[in-house]
Image 1 (cartoon, rainbow, N blue to C red):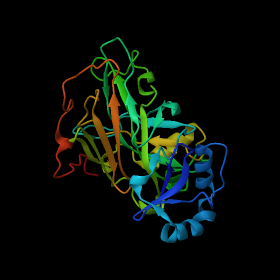
Image 2: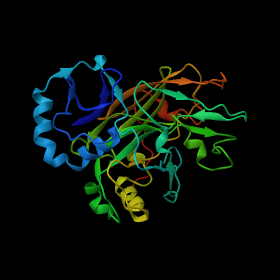
Image 3: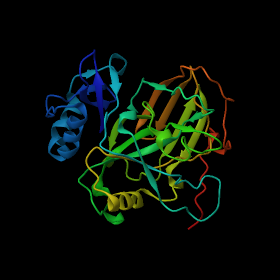
Length: 309
């Protein structure tokens, strides 16, 4: 199933299912909570109990045309957004780097059709996209062994880790991760695909377009540290709760600048595609195109760089 939050007007987002027929309202079988985020966490926690009713609605419920609704971020304010640092083999054949993560500001979350707003920094920064697969947690999950990882993953979504960088790839403010956490710097969506629809999260294609130019185009098989290890690592540090996110990192081939007036799209295989706009109040410009190699932008094939064995 593909779970969404959507609006038909100016009211509060409504939980729904994204189907081939359109968007189906499930608010009649889902308990409404104080916020849309808590409502979605309730769906995650009660999913097995709700599954029969949701399956019936997916097949028979009244469906609104997708063009007639506005999709919202499926998790508007996750309790935690953990993001892998690096984590892809890319073109380099070397020893894997040590697994590490940082926390991204939940207030940075936006969704389909929204606007990435570049901050009005006066220093010579550049703002870059990182298209990623994100894990949607079912908790509480603490000290999960990697062989038991499936019990902690409810589903999957797409995430753009927008990043403000200075010289080279140095993140804003002398290497801190504040440059990852400006408002609007965490687009997620367009939906949450439940885990039963994706047997292997380490065999998905992630793509990203900037004004129609294909930039990211990689397979998640190239993760240095794969999904089971990410769950073990993160849950060994802290308790993961329902609705938390772990972004799996990006393949930096195809990395490029975001700038005023552009339209960008992310697509994660079996999750879906969403489009956003970019606005820069200062109207800055950078060289268009790819900054870190073009191998991953080959539209005909996804190269894999994982060393044999």
